[in-house]
Length: 517
Image (cartoon, rainbow, N blue to C red; front, side, top):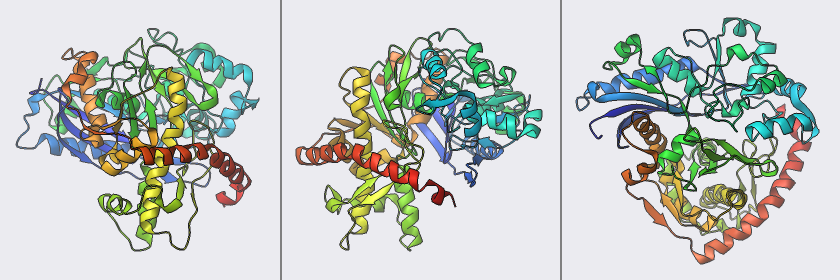
C-alpha cells in the first residue's frame, strides 16, 4: 500500500495539520498552521471556519506540488479533529457564521431551561433518558453542540435563517471536499441525540430531539463510521491539484484517530493523548457510564464497538501557557529548552505543585469554574522548578483519572501509549511512566499520530487493511518504565489531588464573579 496516499487533515483547537500519509501509515510530509480563538466576556469562544478551509486548501496545494509527489497516488481524503463544536453551513457547505467551539458557553441558559434541575444541575428524569440511550448527557453549562445550537436558534436568527445544517467541524470539512452532508454516531457523539445502544440504526432519537428543542431537519444525515461519503468534487480537485476519483471517508473525532494512530484498535489497547486537552481511552466491547466521574463510552471504531471517553480540559496546553507567561518576562524559550530546563529540577520540583485546571475539568470530577494554581512557591523557587511542576501536574492529573478509568474498564491497563505534541518530550514520557506506575510507550512521531490514524482508517474503508492488523504496520516506540522513588512520590501527589481540587473549586465558585470582570 506504500504507493497509495491519503490527504489527511487533523483540525486541532490550535489549528490544522495537513499531511500526505501512505495507506500503510507513513507520514510523508505535513504542515502545521495556527488559528486564533476569539473569546468574549459573554462566554463566547469562536473560530473562523472559512479560515480553516483557506489554510487547509493552500497547504494541500503546496504538498501536492512537491516534486517527489505524484498527485495520482492520492486515493483518499480523511478528516479528523476537535469536536463538541458547531459550524452552521448553508446547503453548499459554506459557513453562515463562525464556529462555536467546545469552549463556548453562551448556550448555558437555554440548556438549563431544556433539561436543567436540582440533581447535579439536571432534571433527574431527563438525565436518566440521556444516559440510558447515549451513555452521557449534554452539559448544563452549554459547552457542547446542544448548547451551541440552542444559542444560535434563540440569539442568532439571522444566521439560522441562512443555515441548512448544524455540523461538527470534521463533518463540515468533509462536506467542503465532497459537497455531501453527512455525520456518524461517532462524529455526533457530543450532540447526545443518537441512541448509541443501536449503532446500526442511523438516525437521531426523536424523543431526545424533542426534549432539547432542536430542529431535526438541520441535523446532517447519519452514515456508518468509515463509510465513503463521496468523491472529491471536480471543483475542489481542480483547486487543490488532485487527480480524479479520490474517495472521502466520514469525519473522525480526534479520539478515534488517536486510537488508530497509536496502533490501539483492539480491545483495551490504551492510549493517552497529551495534546491541547488530555484523555485516556481504549476500545471496549459494550456501552457503559460512570456519571460520578464523567467517564462513559462513545461510539467506537466500528458500528458495533465503543471507545472509553473522558477529558481533562488542559493537557500539553499547560506548557504552552507557561511559555507565554515566561515570554512576557522576556524568557522566550523553545519547548525543547523548557524541558531541558525542567530536567535540572529534581523529581518533585523542590516541593512545587501545579494543578493544571486552566480551563476547568471534566474527568474524574467535573467543574467548569475550577482553575489552576501553583502551590508551595518560595523565594528559592526557580523557573526550572515551575516548568517541571507543570509537567508533573499534567501527569499526576492523568494518574488521578487512570484509577477510575481502570475501574471502569474492569482491568489494569498496561502498557499505555502516549500521543500528541507533549509526547515528543522524553522527560515528559518518563514522568508519565512514574506518575501512572505503568509502562509507557512513546508512539513514534507522536505529533502526527492523528494524521496517521485518519489515513489508516481510510485504508480500512477502502479495503486495504483490517482494523486488527494495523498494529503490525507501526514500529514500536521508546519504552519508559516506572522508577520506584519517583513512583512513590507521584502516588502521594495523586492522592492529594482530590483534596486540592475540592478546595480550589470552592474558592473558584466564590470568586467567579470577580474573575469575569
